Length: 454
Image (tube, rainbow, N blue to C red; front, side):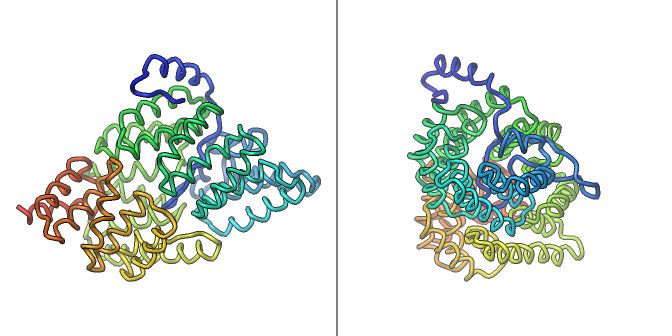
């Protein structure tokens, strides 16, 4: 198992051993509000160029890091060897990655077709089943992702992709205790960056930031490939940003971008940290670059709010354009089999159709009970005037100990709206103490509400 706080000596020995296993596959993470994983994009305005990435799909075929070129090579190989079920599985998973890194859900049906072809040629092969688990997760269909991962693990208990997808699915279903056990199992079977980063996130969700940081730092120390370095450094940057440590976050994002200058989470995270540090112009420029390459809901909303916060002439219109693009992405995502209700609820509650936000949040809560869906439902209920119904969900979002300033802000506003001024002030103060720049608009609104509550 990964190191525990009460077993530092044993854990340290195990981590030193595992630190020598660098160069493993990058994390096949779940993109809830959009975001790339292991593969970067080509430089804007230039021909496609290789970018740093570890072999998230297949060491032999996709290890170059140039995902588009690797897909082209796979397609050519399969024209001459159409019964190569392993390459069909690899192609399917590569399409999943391409959809995520380019914000193009239209790739998901192609992934599904390739994975089915692999299973037709070799029924029950674990590579394709693990690919289907990743595809289902990318579409936010976590029940099926878990089922596919379990089927793959029956065929191959050491499948890194399936072990990782199983943790992801349990996390995104809100089954955190099971996710923790699954991370321990994966750690025992296939220690490496994909498992270490997942283990850290499970600990962070429980409020154990110290362990999460230590695990990620040790994973970064053992990472050797540029893709793994970029991924883990960006995860550490996000952890630092969540705690309001913007200087450390910017340093870590710089390290990630030194390994891969096109790595989306680092570009996006750097822009957020710049905004929180008062460097709004840099943040806007950076986020504009992100959305020009990856027009996904999270960055689109962030850019819109940065425009609104700047308040210059025409900025409100520019902000509305970003929010409208979220609607366009959501429609495209749904047309290609993606459950986009959480994205809809988060964006529409503040910047769109509030009734639609509540419908989407209720639908998402019916499927899975996570801290994120609890927060989204609480806030959607609040903006629709149902604060007493919202309060239990706002409290549930913070009940695991997960340290998230936006969740605390939402809880504080809802507590005040229900007449609980004391706890409302405490929650708002906690949000601003934890991460005073957690949102371009929300942080300012939290300060205003806190002042009004005095």
